[in-house]
Image 1: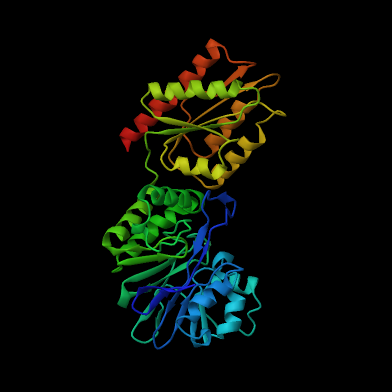
Image 2: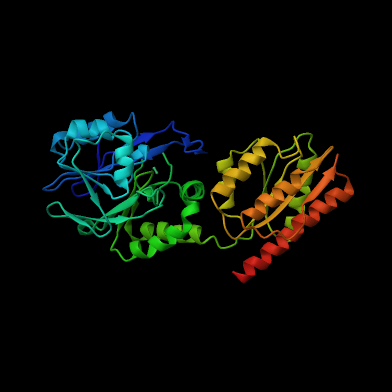
Length: 401
Ligand code: FEO
């Protein structure tokens, strides 16, 4: 349980949780996550964020290798969600800080979660500066990135941005720096995190990036996962966030579907061949075999979504309904869509999916395709044509930029 020195007198004192899987409804598999917390040793000693419930002992153990916990003067809570604040009561009890800082909106969540009657809480807003000795901490609220209370802390003397949830990834490992990790896995983890948590707040990302880019930064230390050090790594994550938030169309498609007796599955394969004929690579993802968060992650590289379900109880199968609900909540933009499904008796599913995708603002270049009983040549041709129409529409969209 050693602390890790990031810069002179600035330490990581977080906790690696290899077993955590469920992150407010999305799943990082096969990895867990890291709850990062940081200590700055100066005339005033500062603990930047805390850790998840159950991890207080780990944080205190690492902190204890640097200083007696009672020597912490200030605690900064950049965000009060419990993965960062769940151990706060224990830490406050042990450290007895002189002051606890949070954003003005953070006061609400702090008071909602804890009995703060006797806590020395101070609310801060964007631009407020806290002098701690040789260093200062400048606060910047980042409302809805991803909670109303979220903020980041900038230490100009060390060119360090402690960014809380922003710029994070759910990676559990012994490494602390992004440049030590497998590049492909890192990229996937960033996309997964963004597409399952940050995506609805893409406009806030685009509004925040210019503020962050004006700062002189050579390290971005998020509260989850790996830390970006050096100009190249900092530039990489800022550029990634811009790209992910812009959601410019990409010439690739994802098809998600469920099937009862393999008819809708055959339709999915036919739609895939239509996309391929149009020159759009596609990936088929059965909702039985892929978690809804994996399908969202795939969407990070896809400008088109096709979805299929057989009709079940006059609507779609439940896993398809769940996927549609999850996707709609994450508010993807700038996509092309298509819907299909088989049926035995009533046949509502394809129309229902079509309407759901349309309600997400997707361009729907073709009517939903439905097929009674098992798909024969005609139905498969209709699915192929659906895939082709979606592919052609996506290519046009990509050319328009
Ligand atoms: Fe919004 Fe990592 O908590």
